[in-house]
Image (tube, rainbow, N blue to C red; front, side):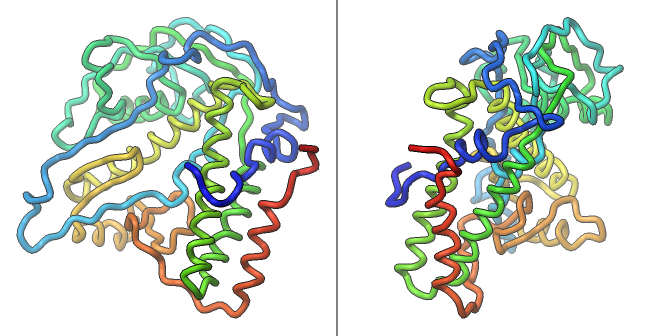
Length: 331
């Protein structure tokens, strides 16, 4: 996406300021690429699924489409990735595996039968590959989701034929904290905006920020033009993004029908069901229409009302400071 702002240097921030270290040691930036990492092998779930058309919404009801605040950023902050190179772990028994302690990497699974396709799209998505391939390679966040469903009895059979994994793991939490700091400064700028020109400036800068951290994972897939060649890291974040959205939809389906899922983290439900969900004593999903709280749902494409702030120029300046940093690295 082209904007009037230079793309935010998210990858430089990761590589030179907040790397995914383990006990203070830098990771294997260019570990040998495991076979499942190669292009076109791993299946990252995605969907464009509808339960029924909007015209079929019951009379007196209305549909509402939600998405997840900072969904990709939330995924990168919550996933663990391999610190070292991956090795072959052979066949694994899902009965012996704890979803909370799955090794990062890839797993070759038999495509499980999904008996609730009238309720929600399969947790593996609706890729045409699933109709013709008996086995698929998935990244570990997808396996975690499948193990959870297996343990609760929603998936009756789960076979893991092979794994490429690493016992040592690290995470992007330090990097994610820096990115959240930038995002919050940008949202302060949005809330302080008082003119259309200032709002357009925020939108351009925010798009440049999202483009920057999205491009970081795209570049890791190939290793071109960057320090890191870790496609397993990229696949892990993409899979975590999908698994998190699917879990929210699955929980909402216990309250009322999920009408559709699209663009990975878009979920459409009946407005009355959403209200029941977010006001329940133990809500299955969390709501934040301001767009600030990562991982919370908000109504899609709704512009939050600007807050009254006295220092619009100061907010814009804080955001600009982040974009002007080179993080101590020469051009």
